[in-house]
Length: 448
Ligand code: NDP
Ligand code: HSE
Image 1 (cartoon, protein in one colour):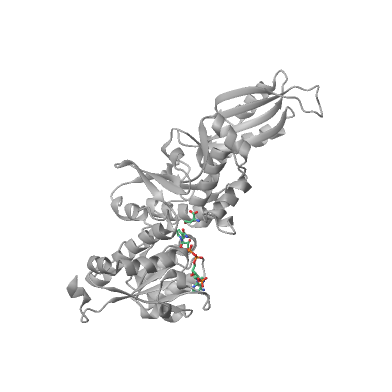
Image 2 (cartoon, rainbow, N blue to C red):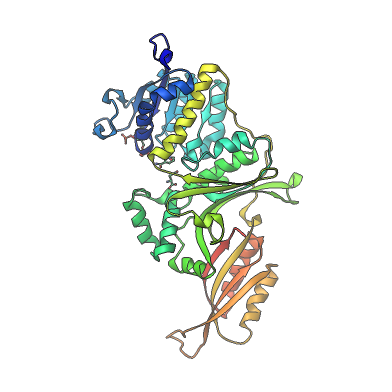
């Protein structure tokens, strides 16, 4: 290590864009682990500047040398060998990354929103300028997941990636399950603990998970998948009643990201990609059911490797910085010894299938009139859409005070696997039946 400290050894220049939750941790760890990083890279790393938006903000708590801060990010990226982008959002992050490439810098980013929107553009620009684009922290924070997909599983055929990739929503659903809290109350708790942002839309509406699903599907299936290709439902419609219904079935509700290759005869070549993000019931015995609080976990199923599970912290300053710094070491090493990491792999070019073709199961709760023939009408609606019923449970309900003479019952139906379009048409047909007073809950069931 001592020779690396010699003034003759030219350090690699690192520019940090952003000094918020992630950037502050990256800056601190780069300083704290400077000697180890230098040894691992083969040259010292020198932070040449940190771009921020608000010049006057008091940043004494970060412990970062104040002379490093600048609001001129455009200039900063031209003075670096490695640029770490942890600003987030689309602009100016995209322009700054492109500018960094033009000036010969490799880029490490945690920006899933940008990658899911414009990944191909960034890959192409990196390739044109012979530099690296790494983004391990963009999906599932600290968990090494993208490198295994990009590199370790490059010789295998990945069939399915399924997991919990958003910590905020997992925390909210976990609290609803364990404390009986309603959605709004659980979101408030998540905000108090700093998991959910003041505006939690990207998390609770599933945009964050959809961006991550797009990145996972692109890497797993060697095809281009953007955020817009992902079927998305967030957790805002999940009620305490849904969570209770799941509990009754010995299930738990989780927001899942599911990326699958299906052998679909309707597609040319027979294969297509289904990518979706939605809440789903999973059995409590499933390993994902045990993923509590703000943790993430992802299952990967590959033809030869079989099932693999990745688990850990999907958010937070230090955990995310760990993934960022792993990438910094990788791209910095390439600067020292030559070579580049893997570029974009899209040779399979598989079509994206509409959600209607995804195979899934439904849990449906109905409030029905307790009269002869109701069950037969309900069963007919399923049969007409070629959806097979797995279980039916009936329970008498207390009469509606407005019509005390009418009997009421609750029907809870779980289906076998069927195309989502058929299941959704069945629910529409059920809602039209005069004997169905209300469709009280519809949720997909996964993990069996
Ligand atoms: P923060 O909002 O905490 O920090 C953003 C930083 O970027 C701030 O320092 C801000 O400056 C700076 N910034 C904003 N706009 C500009 C601009 N125009 N020019 C220069 N600097 C700017 O974000 P996070 O650290 O939470 O997230 C950063 C990235 O990491 C995002 O892409 C996010 O999705 C990703 N990520 C975050 C995780 C987390 O747990 N937080 C986990 C995994 C990924 P100022 O300080 O002046 O406001
Ligand atoms: N908002 C994200 C989450 C941060 O809650 O998982 C990590 O990407």
